[in-house]
Image (cartoon, rainbow, N blue to C red; front, side):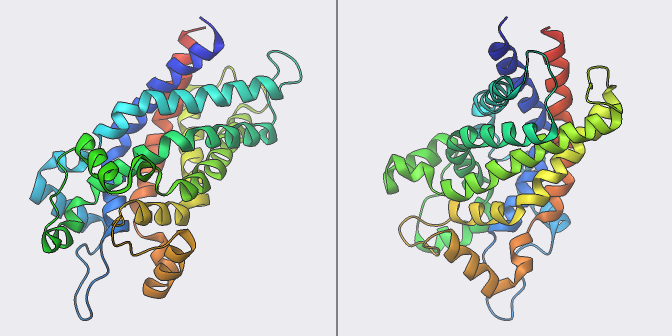
Length: 296
């Protein structure tokens, strides 16, 4: 089996592990990010992450925490296979000789390159996922306007294409790239740096699973710490109405978020994102490492 196919397979397994562990946290994050600003004198729909969990489970049952999972599940193989295989090819280009370990700086570069490629697949997937996850918090506005709520990923895609054409699926591409490129550069760089530190040398081939879990968790936390405000901007743009948008673009979204909520508005849902990042990314990297090692 060639290296590209090995990376594709291992990336697929890693992505599935990430999704299973992390999706409920992601659902709460998007609900908090996308809830409309309350009218003067009224409280927001969700008081915080715990309240969002309680309301979601009460209204939709536990499966409500997995709402919108269909879109990323359908493409998780392609997304993570692409991310890890492009990263693998970048590593091959950056190596001074076959088999030589990459420096942390080179891992940053490889991660950034992988992020560029992954953005074009991540954008439509994230848009469908976010619009499904945000349905309950936007239901009131939809009912008032007489708009039918889409029933699933395919229905969301049909609504988007009907309203904005195929290019509507790429709404939020700029902030998606603003998240994926620096975020993956940081994530893969921190992962390699943590592994080398824990191994005590650039050779990390004999690192134990516990150390891999720790390195993967740190890498995931670093990803969100470095790009979270960009993710908020991406989410609000992707759930925005196509016919009567609140935001004309990323900069307009930033200005309006700051005007309404201050800097803290750019960190809505930060708690669930960080709570998700450690276990989900630890699962991703460990699943990837185990699968890649098993494939030889």
